[in-house]
Length: 338
Image (cartoon, rainbow, N blue to C red; front, side, top):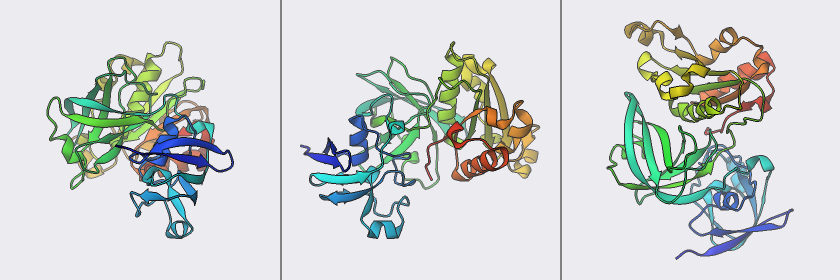
């Protein structure tokens, strides 16, 4: 049996209910409040708050999203704290953090797995009693088993009435969660909590779309391009830049795009010269973002960018776009999982 506690926001004096098995961040987002966040995993620090009254349990005291001095001053991360009593907190808020669909927790069945590279595959789950409601580019929290095996994964498909949630999972050697996916059998259940994320597709922005991805970061970019390409009202040009270490890391992305592939200008690249030579790669060699100036026809500031991938890739892309090409930051969308 769960207990509900009142969480009051200082300043606005708005309150919401949070169960003792839910985090303060997710409970607030479920109530439609715009609590600041990005990663939901304790890494980025966007959801830091000051606990003014009450008591919380910190699920991840070592989370990298807070510096030691901040923690000493009483700062906490809303995505990693559950209430032990009524609380009053001070946290940054804004409308940009409100999801178009309020996140919810529900059970879903494992449906299928399809490998797309030697260490990456598309995994599908089906929610029994609800449609899959999310905006292209968002993510969900998946919980496997009875232990604390919860991770954030972006959806690679688009919203649908069938209740299908598809994710791209990369096997991480020695990882605590990714190996568990290979142990699932048909009908096995997981908990899905979502949708979350602020780097989702904005069809109202009339600029050509550029998707940039590496590794399993392909998932949200693929979802965005599928949504944009399938939207008959969105006529802007679509481009996808995808990078891997070697040729075996590059999935057959045109086939994954399906019917919208004809609308997407696709530019793959591998970064390790030795692997390119060994595996007979005849395409571009180098870091994926280095292709943008030569492959895109317009000045880089004329595009809207959606990206996901390793932190070093995101940092390099942002540095190039903003510093070298004067692209405004509000035209660059990504959720920080640093």
